[in-house]
Length: 158
Image (cartoon, rainbow, N blue to C red):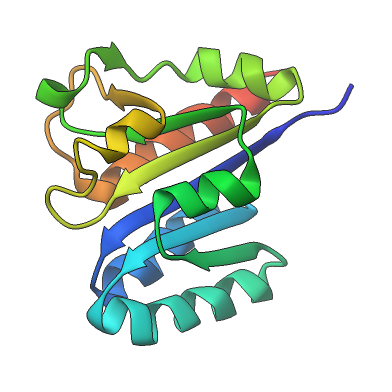
């Protein structure tokens, strides 16, 4: 049986450190495909090249695109999850649901917003807005860590 893909995306960010740490966390927790979009300032000019170098050294792929819709167009994911603060989402992040889709050979795109607000109301229409239950605001680095850690544990439990 084949497994699908879980792709992570950092959207709307400007810092080198945010970009670098995002890719280090994602790679460390098993991600092999990482997307960056709506990068600005040093995040775009220096952060993305650093991330590409780190990813290349781990035999992972990096895409650098303008907008969320560009990633959706190129990747054609079966499911898109956008991590957002609780007031803007009614659905709790459910790693079991994602792993079930992954086991069915589906492609899942997980999008994390960098700068505040990170993901706009219009961009929420591209997928399923989710939040973490029993956790306050973590920021994109905490969110990607928690999401990928939970997903990796479920994959390895099989």
